[in-house]
Length: 269
Image 1 (spheres, helix red, strand yellow):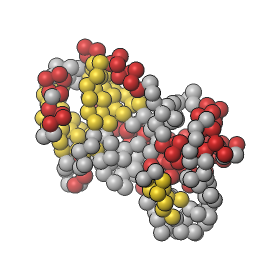
Image 2: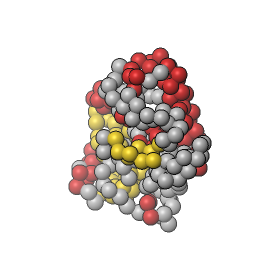
Image 3: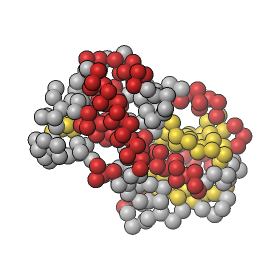
Image 4: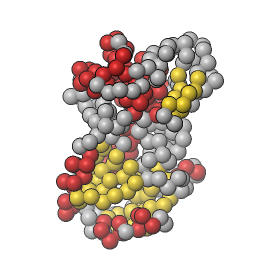
């Protein structure tokens, strides 16, 4: 579930806590993680950054640790809030040289944790689309990538090779604000509609980062606290509720196996 705002919130927290720290050990109860212990021991964290929905730790000796939290994963630092059930599915702990612990809570055990050579990882990540909040991601670039792809606009927004970081939650929220139905064909949208979508990509993602993400499901920040974007949520998981703009009932429909939430009156098909 964590999308760009949640991952960015986590990365910003990590930058205040783990830079220049060294891994001294690892505990895991999932087989796929146990082999990391020997390879990580003694490696210093030189940089923490985000690419799309990925958290990357650049380490000493030309290595990088990639963590993708997937559906239910989130990282926790030291004395996190253990009263919240979402923080109690710990399957991986990194022990740091300052005596602190960086842990991964993941109910469904889907999270990806991989150690790469830094050069190889950067090449692998080059397949991702542009970062939507990058200054160089202009409207003209957005228009070009959208109109060059076949498919419904929600699918295009969620395609990580088109735009990096947007998923189910924020695509619904962006399209509701832009008044565009998620099933509309991206290549057939009018210039005005594209400009609205582009505008709300920037506004919604920035606001979500400011509010430290959305915690309607399992996501928690680095300290085990919920994000505050929920008070801004207009469409996602509001099926049957009144649209806050026009009063019509929010509907849900399946698109490529995923639920889409929209207002049938504000967002005409």
